[in-house]
Image (cartoon, rainbow, N blue to C red; front, side, top):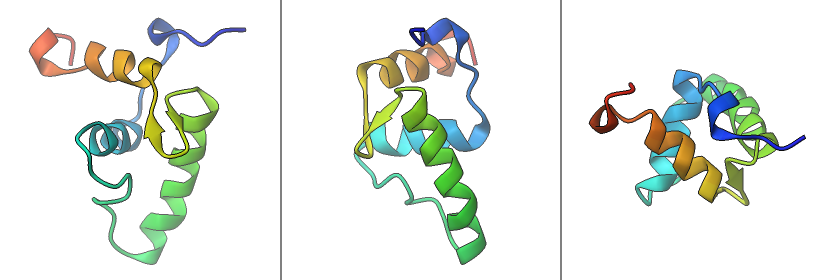
Length: 76
């Protein structure tokens, strides 16, 4: 089964990680504290599983999903 942008709903954490990577920052640049890193690993794994990240880099599908949810497009 192929993952499409239309089927994917991002959590706030997933969106933040994708925004960081798309803007050239480290995926974890917004995280502080050990507990937050523990939760962020699950976020990173889910983004990779859905094909939005690969080797901590945003994929084309990740850009499409993130672009479809930006306020500039009126679909926030």
